[in-house]
Every structure is written in C-alpha cells, then in structure tokens.
Image (cartoon, rainbow, N blue to C red; front, side, top):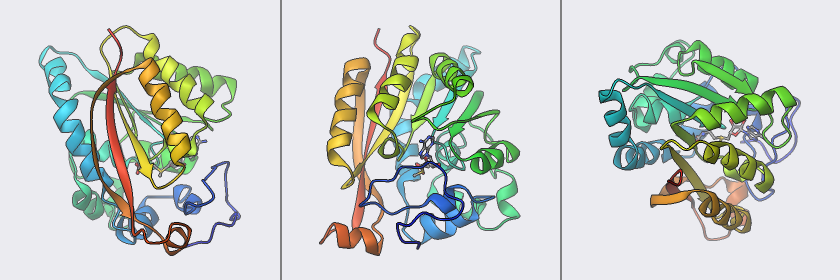
Length: 260
Ligand SMILES: C[S@@+](CC[C@H](N)C(=O)[O-])C[C@H]1O[C@@H](n2cnc3c(N)ncnc32)[C@H](O)[C@@H]1O
C-alpha cells in the first residue's frame, strides 16, 4: 500500500490525513487494482451490506415502479468503477463482484444483468473509472467532475441528474466531499417533488466531526427512512497507527427520501 504521499498521477482527491490514500487505484485503467488492493487486501465487504439495505428499504419501491411500467433514474455519486452499482442494480454481493473483477479480461463485461429498468448515471472525479463503467455497461451516462469545485458545465449536468433521480447512492464517499458540496448535491436532489431515495454511508473512525455535520445537514433537507451498521474494511497499517487498538473501519448505512 502506498504511503500518504502524492503520486505522479494524483488528481484533486482530498483524503482525511489519518485515512489511507487510494488515489492511484481510483485512476487505474480498470477495476483489477481496486479488487486486488482494496477488496482483497482489506476485506472490503461493504458492497454486500449496501445491497442488503437497498433490498430492504428501496428495492420494493423500485419493483413497484417497474410493475407500473416506469423506468428508474439512478445516480451513483463518487461511483469509482461502479462496485456499488454492481451491488444494487445488478444484485451482486462482494464475492460475485470479486469474481467478476478477477482479471483484466473478466472485468470487461458485467456477469449479471440489471435487476430492473434502471437508467444509470455515474459521477466521479476519475475519468478512467467512468470510462470503464461506461465500457462495461454499468453506466448509460457519466459525468466527470470534481464535486468540491465543479466546472459550470459539469455542475449543471450533476444538478440535473440529481434533480431527476429516483435513486441516488453515495457510498464511502462523503468523507471526500466538503460540507458545502454535499449541501449543493442534496439541494439538487430535494428540489424535485416526486418520491425518491438516497442511500449514503458514514465511515468510522475517520473525520467524525465532519460526518456529524453531514448527518445534521441531510436531516434538515431529507426525511430519514432507516439505517444499519456493519464492517466496512480492515484498517491499513498506517490507519492502525493513527487509531491505536482499532482493526476495522466501520460503516453506517442510511436511507433517506425526499420530503412529501
Ligand atoms: C472510496 S471510493 C468509493 C467507491 C464506491 N462508491 C464504494 O463505496 O466503494 C471514493 C470515490 O470518490 C471519488 N472522489 C474523491 N474525491 C472526489 C471529488 N472531489 N469529486 C468527485 N469524486 C471524488 C474517487 O475518485 C473515488 O472513486
């Protein structure tokens, strides 16, 4: 694992100083380094739990919409290579994702079809991750943007995608975003009056004050639906030094919806 030093291909990803940098993995050509150096190396299990809370609190509503002949606008915010989309849209737990991303050949296509008629948009700062997601058929559209400092065109596209979204997922991601950026994203989502759901994650033990501020902000703008807590991944040696006595990063998963 790399130390927390800027690498030659580093982009504008702001990582909490006590948290491991994974920037070079996010900008790789395909998700094999993500699978080997994060999912395998750190027992990154959170995709399974994102799938399970989605299935419990959001999927029944999506199925009802599909039964009525509606397609669903779906946005994965800070999607990286699309592992959460594989979990919630394609119904894959982490072992299935691991097998799919085992090598440069197998990752080219997604092993399972979409569960429902989702129209998918991936948003991230990493152009390479988005290009993979589009190539592999995970995302119908992609928007490349630094969400902390978006260019006007990308800002407008993100605003529209969130406003029109039926489902937004943003997993293991708020830790990279400034509070003002999260507020803007939530405002875009909340502007629409139709029913719509958001699945978000909070990480422990990283940047807890900022996670608390984010929770307060979300509760101001959206309605709380339900939550669960679980393991996220193992801490790196660097993180274990920064948080003595801890071995795991933990994950809180929240589902929110637009207010009536
Ligand atoms: C930990 S990964 C999350 C991947 C996936 N959502 C998951 O839960 O595994 C964080 C993602 O956030 C993206 N990211 C970090 N800073 C960003 C920013 N300022 N704007 C947009 N995306 C950003 C990174 O490129 C990376 O793909």
